[in-house]
Length: 259
Image (cartoon, rainbow, N blue to C red; front, top):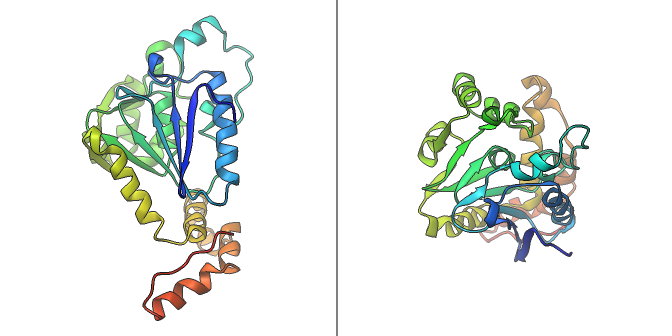
């Protein structure tokens, strides 16, 4: 895969996806989104990869969102939305593998939207979050206006979105947006600790859990409980559904099978 704007590395069962445009605070423009789409296709298809870690190059920014300088010289009127939504990322509802955002600095606008589209967010203590699009005549069209009110109280979300103000990593943690805040040098070790805990579980079980939890959010509770999601069917016909209880009974570590 010929990548110029992203770094993509696989280590064990982890894939590391790094937006590599630090000179523009890892902002996103269409060529970046195109590369991201291809990387996510590979991530989804590789059975040996169980978890994705998304971050930005450098120590200043996870991503400052839409590349406004690029937008200023390339009109958005009539432009076709990228495959996968903003950044090639925010509308990949087909991906049931866990995604962890390692937020190493500013996560603003589309950068915040990418983080919100991940399942877990670990933030460096100097990180800041916000949806400042209205301040430049835009709107958080990459899912931000929909995901943020679903993840924190409505009035808090509306206050953030209508003013475009930033919040600190500590404030984001207090609101439940961020799972853990750590010093920058501990960011990746902490992300990898979370990933290691997830990988103690069956990858098929984890994927079925993510799928059911997210798809069930917009259903009435009774329907969600009764719904037989594809991941559940896959789980119930897997090696792991037998191996897990057997390993527990035999007091040994389960040997999950990649299927």
